[in-house]
Length: 117
Length: 239
Image (cartoon, rainbow over all chains, first blue to last red; front, side, top):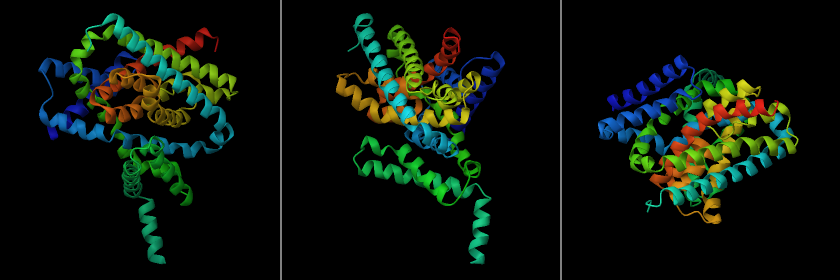
């Protein structure tokens, strides 16, 4: 449990420091994720306790977004004024983005990687 | 009555109360989500946020006081993002084979998200500040807030819009893609990750391990791509 917890925090820390040192336009934890994935590749897989703690965190990923979501309380009047335009924009843009992403990926997978299933 | 006041004064000054309420609200929302047989509109983040906002308004508690407690949960977003490396590693073989389709689809999806937000938001007459806060809506909260700050949006408003987008993508994503005729869990998970970051990824994991892993990958890459594309696009359009 402790070595796994340390691994996650240490990779996040290294990610945060590197992103700032090199002024990279991505969040530290995302770089930490990439570095840990590379490390797992070199090691040939995650140790069992790390897999368990990752599962535990990812099973409840939704919980972790709640505090930021409650921040809507500070913007209630702006959201009340523009709720229709905001809702339409988010709905339409998200729907288009979903279809374009899925369509591009499945079309290219069929053309470029026909050996996939 | 005096005792009650003293207890309230203690609780209001400590992080314990709002931390407990946050976890409790999530637990209740999870239970409701399952009880409705995972009805998309009963999304746990949506329910929990709505419940917590009501409680804060009813008790006249400001966001800062709430966040003093809830920040412990918020902090775990970082380690959880790092933990996405484990399912990602599980998909390494597929990823090696699919890097080109993934790269191109990522660029297409990222551009679509930014341009459609700018276009539709402008047509809908959104206030400039709101529009600029909305542009990075498809990427994970910390990077979206950074982009918003850079382009003249309101970072705290962005955080909220990102969550709303995530909920929209999680609710709409997989059912809509299935309806349009996409079968492959990889394509579905990937699209949900591009459009709806971590909240979409959380939903994709409950669809399948492969969908979740590709969703997490798409979310991470899209954060970096969007951070580069947004300033360039705004500069090109003379913003």
